Image (cartoon, rainbow, N blue to C red; front, side, top):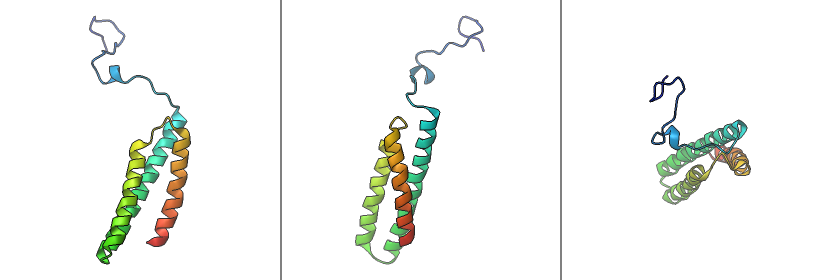
Length: 107
């Protein structure tokens, strides 16, 4: 590709998405651990959805409301998680495993 001056190198303009990205402050391993933790959170949120549906079908509005609150807490964890927080990512991944085992026992 040619830059604006017709040269052979590619210049990144400052007003583009790439030009405003900055640099990452985490490693590829951190990014992978983060993606695994996000996937775990997605499974937990999904497990809560199933239990909420069961509670509603059983007419247990109080349980459905409690489960919805717990599900919301996991969604907040997902929103607040960052690959730069390796300890937090590890803790969330561990919590996901424990929570999924507990929720699957309730299903």
